[in-house]
Length: 235
Image (cartoon, rainbow, N blue to C red; front, side, top):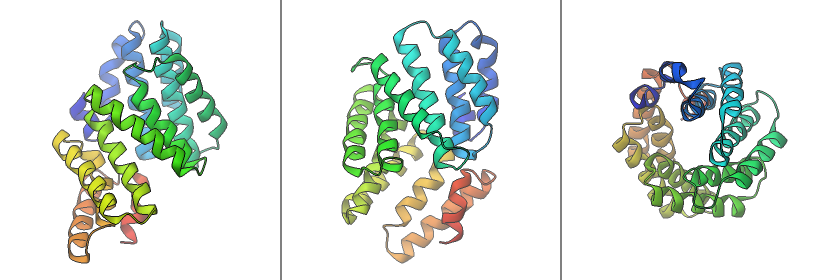
């Protein structure tokens, strides 16, 4: 399943979970998360993700599972808002607030929730200090839980805030760490954005090499993530 997900084959990965999803709440939540991630990367598949989320919410049997399902609902609503599908900002905040009430501070899903609350603070709330605090909590939690993929995302977003503040060396370090972790995991579908982000803080020659590699991967994966196209076209 990881190999399919890492190459952007979310529907195929979700199909592997479908036979168990009706009776197994963990499988239902994992399936919903895969289909939500497809929306984030492709800006498509919204209806299927909604159906999967409703099924996951219906099968959740304890606070951790209900919190995980609410976290995915918040992320889908956030993606719909920032990608221009439909403004669901209030729903995103409400769902993540519900997840925060359900998930214990030490719950395995708490770092991901903190990260997504950081996304909302940064991109919907225009509050970089709150976003930075949330990303740092997420990074510490992801490190403690051994969640390397989430660490790669927290590194990248903390680096983005550092770049906004003019901290070039800190930004370069964060973007490089993010790329390194994605390479180590083999998270192919997430490498083009990481390469493009690192290119933005490198000298011209190195930046050109990184952008060329990002463009190669972007084409290899059939133009995914879709939102990267404009950035690469203008590079």
